[in-house]
Image (cartoon, rainbow, N blue to C red; front, side):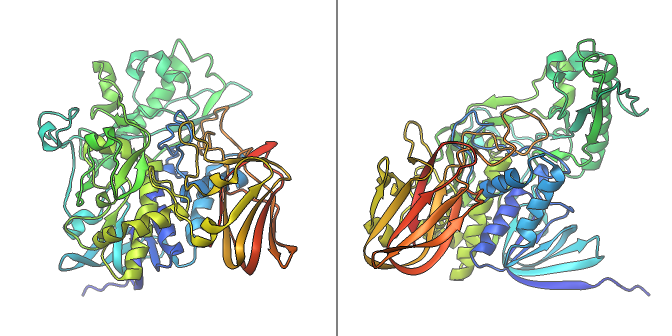
Length: 586
């Protein structure tokens, strides 16, 4: 007789997110904050995916390591990064993992299921009725029934389970008229990488490689001595898998990558004529055992983003996210291409920013399926840019916000496209940047009279909350100065919002690469202390005094009938001067 001794725990939700990488985390948080009941299922013990302490890839995006000024993704990602700068000056990945964990675990309306792998789907026609996962730690099946599902798993696990249309590999040149595509379609992908982390000590640190590691005597096998002259964070070009099945062969690919990674470190420590002396006091501190993956399944949505869309800036009417990373296409040969003079990556120009259409974020044939991250609807070439995690966060926040709107309206994801203005307004109010779309303010803010001690405060309601080219879009002020918003008659003010300057041109990345320009505390121009005061019947009263702010977007409850509201700037996190991008009320 056979029995199933394992319990099944059932959850009812508005929105279920599969995959707790950065895109899925942002999607789950956004939906929960807008009132949806959310379940987030993730198959690892820590959140963040490629950005987690298990893999440790820094979050890239439209700012391209800050070489493109002021294009850093704001919204939920900025909130998380600023929290990390405030609480994690030592840049510990355990602390980073904890910050990601608590953002989900202690978010109202959000149920977090870690160590839980999605294994099956129940369908109702063209709709997903439920998903079931196996939670290894509790030895339980977790079944989630939901109105809307989002696949942010990277590998697109819901595609084969639900019958959603998807593809793997590279499109032919004539499919989307992409000039950089191959003449014929194929199943080749970009590979996956394993990195390592090292630390310098005060004494010699000998290294004996495992007997199964590869041996590299020639620097050219490691793309030349200059390619391995900085070894603190390992190398993304230790990459394989593009010529294999990027899902089914992952375990075998990992084994090969470990052989290479240990062989690379053996070369640096024991064989490299250019660097072994300099590396004498360095030792391995961490080796990555979960490969960081770049490409596998890609869903087909109502629209497929292409190379041409990116090159023409993606000026969609329904843009809800943006990118800006170069089209960074890694040849399938990966590490072994070095001996054949195959480049490790081919960079094709992409504008920063470019827009991403909402139609790329939901399935064309499964009515209640959405997606964000590298499995969204894009060609191989377009995905070579959009796959980076900063762009994934931008897509994730859009998907979560759209799911909340769909839940509130009782409609499917596709029909949110009929309410694109509402989706864009909500994203902008949450400080998610949308190129070429301005934030609109309510009648109390637009009808108020602004005054400031220096500069023209009208800029605070122009609807653009970052510098764009030569336009600063900000009010510069000094500590101790005030900005006043006077209403035309007493007004009922529910809340006030300020967007401070968090230094969008600065390096806020979480990385074990100890670059000198990386911040280890909140950005110097960010306001640390401020007061919010209200005027009623010719008397100013303090409403809020904030002494330890470390966020760019700050919304505070007011709940009073006022004649005016005043923001008084106190101390910053280092600079004498600061900037305010927006000050408005609802």
